[in-house]
Image 1: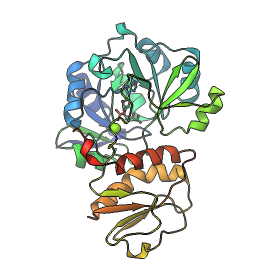
Image 2: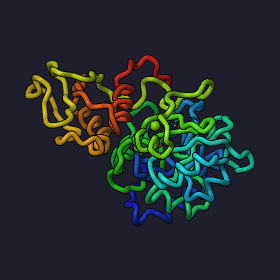
Image 3: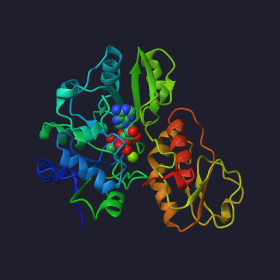
Length: 322
Ligand code: TXA
Ligand code: MG
């Protein structure tokens, strides 16, 4: 079983394991990451193995500073502006890869681009100490909900990894927003912890949406982030035996009969809702209900990413290849 060590005591143990090509679960401001040295193929293979993840899905390389980022990727002026404004933080930039950077091809799944992100807190310090980028997908079994606490990681992956660095609950609670600059325009490949409107304000133009042809779209398999229970979205009335995931001060009809009830945000605050999303889904799943009814969540600001994750969690499971 993985050791669970508090972040303020875990630096040396994490460094020793990562230097030896092992994987370590670490807290970031978005969700927990399952980190390995991005220049070490064996370490990257261990990440895929522990997650049970299809190998065609490329990983984000996490960096400590802009200098490290520019050694790995080629930054056009707009990508650099985005990095300067949102890093460290919940934004991932897809940029052309420098082949000489030493990133193992398993990280990029053979693409000539790379997804880069500079995380806040423990992760950033760890990468600076290690002096090498860390490949890190979300620390969960492939196809399951991302983990937002050290205990959630330990109970999901604990039998397969040596160390979970426990940094408590992750403040953003959703994965990063992934963008790619194409001919001076910003394409959003995955909504996430930075709202589209914040990026549009910097870019000065509406974002392009969806994946570019030929590139595996992030989020990718329609059924992703799936709990065990079925999900029913935009519910106005709770069915018999269902658990209820609420949003805001007003309740769906029949809510008193729900087998279990949790509210993403009493006050209807989308940031709070994002933070609670995965932990609440996991908790309602544990209630044993066969179905989780979800009240409507508005799609503006962080609501776009929340609805994206809910839609994936509700998608039919037969296309889950893992
Ligand atoms: O907040 C986050 O982004 C978390 C934390 C741990 O940093 N990480 C995360 O990683 O969500 P992961 O592997 O679960 O999702 C990364 C997504 C994948 O869906 C992948 O398809 C996409 O990034 N991606 C990676 N490299 C790409 C590339 N070169 N072009 C397009 N998409 C890429
Ligand atoms: Mg993930």
